Image 1 (cartoon, rainbow, N blue to C red):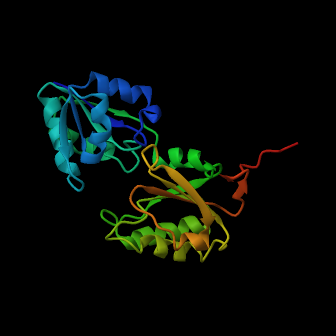
Image 2 (image 1 turned 90 degrees about the vertical axis):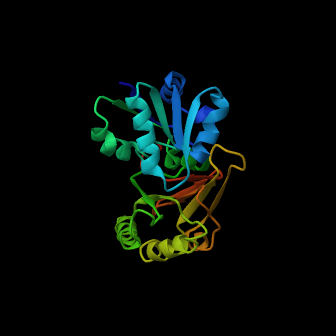
Image 3 (image 1 turned 120 degrees about the horizontal axis):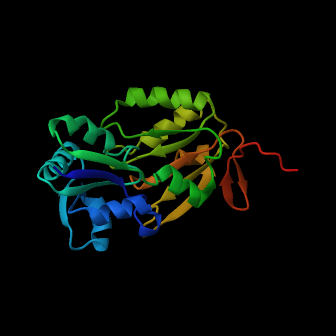
Length: 243
């Protein structure tokens, strides 16, 4: 039987790919992934066999990777960021009993909350919550409850999948919920195209965030009551003594 690595490739640039991920990809006979993520990896390993499926075909992708492993191949199933944070690690493990004998190893990666935070400064220096605004797999009513709870507790927030063509109003609706608990001038930040061409960041207030333009390649950061701008960076203090 073969082996399946479920590997988080980080934000997309080789510099932010972990050594463990790179080693797994080098060992793999086959690389499986969403089309956009496969495109990021292919230049590094042009001679590998690739299995690609479009968005929303995650189960098909996992089954193809597991099947190749059951046939005796070493397979790397790649995910953006971290394989266990909005990635395919869970789904691959759910399907694993259907492919007895396949060994599976989860390779962690740098998720967008961390890589985007580093670009902005240190917005997640204290307790934070990560929430995806995509309702493809989670009902919007559930997302709303999670936003209410996180905002009431004054968590810093990393918001994934803030908007798309089909979900153009989701970030605005999320901000309306957050504004019930957080001050309008709460410092927020955007990290666009992390690790890829067009990478840039913006800082703004929560009220301004309500009108911001974002897409699926944007990660949104919402500060807590202590988050501030320091030397042009977004910083949430942990509370260390400065004397």
